[in-house]
Image 1: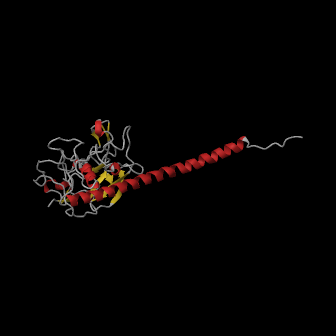
Image 2: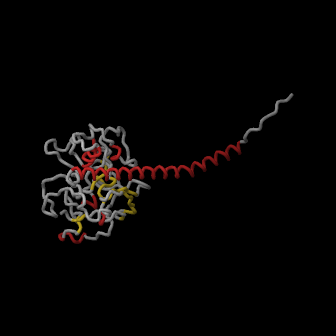
Image 3: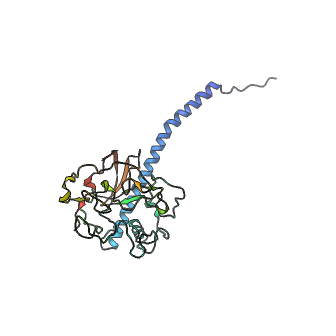
Length: 291
């Protein structure tokens, strides 16, 4: 008695099935990539809203004043183990119910809110290390200095809650350009202070131009077009100590979108279209004169 033979797939049929699978994979992969990118951007926006809530908490604990953006400790100089090192460490203390004395080497605070999921990660970038991918407005939360501000003639101090006009338009925290090849704790981090915003137009750290104030100081009235894009020639991270230093970084989407936190606490996304053509306008960064 002859056994009944089972018919298998022919080579042509197998090739057709493989081709169909390849086509489906080609269709699905970009969709999955977009979904992943959108999820990362949403998490980043959530981080910024949490940071906004923490800034409010910090202000309420400190007579309405926001923290300095970067702080050179008079005793320890700049030291990440100091609880005064920069705005993110002060905000972390607010998230930990005001427990000063904690810092990014010794803290129970969730540091995940300072980590942008779309930022480039480096080897050894562990959750217990100091990680900061966001940068602050250099006039609303300036670096500590006893020098007088060239625009106002006074010491530059952090703004207080309720003292910023147009709070729904003014950007306070934003995706920051990362440093690579800089060594030590800087590697992979953004600078806490956005002095490079609008091509170094704040009056600190060698700044020039409109001083990020509205109205523009008369001495530089040529630079008073607030409805124009910020001066932003290069959407890159930094290699060593050169490049897009202390600046916003449009790293979401197709490397063309940045997430920002506005002074009133809401977060949003802005597009980079071309060099010196972004949705971040000077009206979003030129803040009213301090009172």
